[in-house]
Image 1 (cartoon, helix red, strand yellow):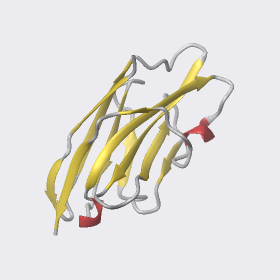
Image 2 (tube, rainbow, N blue to C red):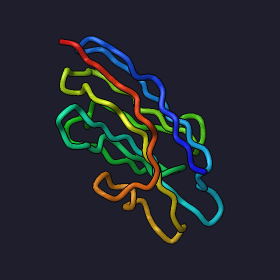
Image 3 (cartoon, helix red, strand yellow):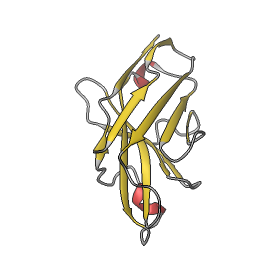
Image 4 (tube, rainbow, N blue to C red):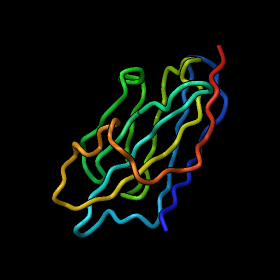
Length: 132
């Protein structure tokens, strides 16, 4: 059974930094499988927004326009974990941040990781609040 658990959310002042982490289990990223890990966010009254995604075990990344240059997605601790380093935070970055994942055949490529694609697995979310 797939499970994603986020951590690292909290409150910070504008201009500050936070690092979110997500640990996954029960998702196959090895052998004949490939996959993507990503971060999405949703603020109250707004639609869910794609933040960043990464091809598992690779270098291909995607970023939403509003965070490009400020946020960095990475996998420093292996295929089953993903982090989101958030710098120069703004009040409009306040939202619940969700970790997401998908796994598929090795015949696919990194384009599957686009933030506009359909993602399969979701974590419960971690809140981030940025005060002015």
